[in-house]
Image 1 (tube, helix red, strand yellow):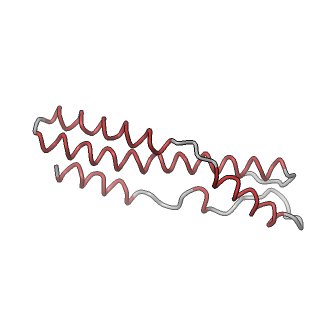
Image 2 (spheres, helix red, strand yellow; image 1 turned 90 degrees about the vertical axis):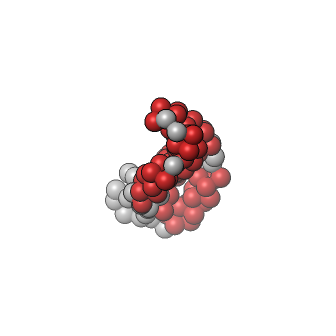
Length: 117
């Protein structure tokens, strides 16, 4: 069980800055309404909830439990489910943040800003 949780904790250390925290890359200059539009688009993107985190956490827990079952011991099933759920939750959170980042970039582009990422 400890080895699965250790793997989950190691994978969490690989997480860096989420996409919504990164500054926007702009092709060209920023006009007078850029920062106002950015604040409004960030609020809109933050309210977008694609729900990927719950699904990835569930599938991660199932995946981890099956892996633990294949390894053989009862504790490995529990540890695998816990580790898989943690890793799946983190992956789902990252996917949700990527979807929000796309909403942010699209919103800025629709408002006429040369945002490329």
